[in-house]
Image (cartoon, rainbow, N blue to C red; front, side, top):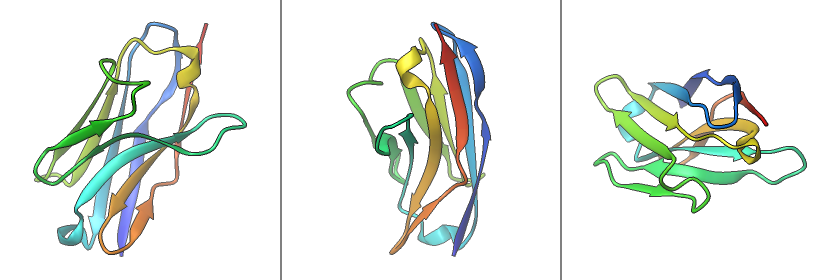
Length: 114
């Protein structure tokens, strides 16, 4: 089992920045991929960014150049730095970790006002 605890998020004006963190605990040595997904109002959950244990990353086209995912394996924590935020980025952001199973955090709200 893997437990994920998110922090960060909140309310910011368009053009601003926010940072999210997700700390993993439990069977962390089996975690391969970690990442962030989001679900906006009336929308399906979508990939934002993922990162492998080795540091390879992949981003949704909508956030490329604005968001940065990073990972500290010594702290079992993944981060999402979000810059140049837009109202369309408003969503609940979920941390995700994959072993042979998939685990989710509880979600944290990000609201970007215009």
